[in-house]
Image (cartoon, rainbow, N blue to C red):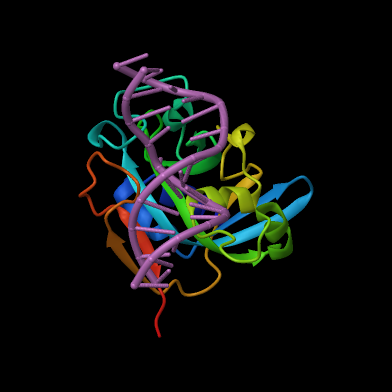
Length: 186
DNA sequence: ACGAGGATGCTCT
DNA sequence: GAGCATCCTCGTC
């Protein structure tokens, strides 16, 4: 099976199954002629109509249309009027389930990421920071992580242990343990 | 190390 | 007009 077919197959699963399996995988962007790449260390699952915290809880709107696309569609939205955040859509087309990418560690093009971020530390350890480091903006909303400028690729190293915790920065359904983080062994 | 507060603009009610 | 799936700075410990 090719890498792309493997990733496509993974993303077709249920969001709660897919989300933890994204930990350790890579996200690579080719934007403005520059390649940057991270390994994912933090994600959160959002389960559409079954999830009051989801942007799609109340159905389709002008903003969240990308969430209703096929698995692998990128959903990019503006957060707090300032930052861009990105999700990867999972499950069958028309089901607005998605995984919010919240953090990663630089693998390739770290100098580019540092320049985009304007600082050397905390380059990609937050959803807004991750998108900024990778150069992802609203124009990328609706593109596919299978063949677009923002691509999901298999992991490069053993992922380590994945732990589930409650999601960050939400007020509705805040008790669900749908945040998944990489725990690095000592 | 940690917490409070402000910036900022779009989306949906 | 309220409410954000955030980040940064500056204060305190």
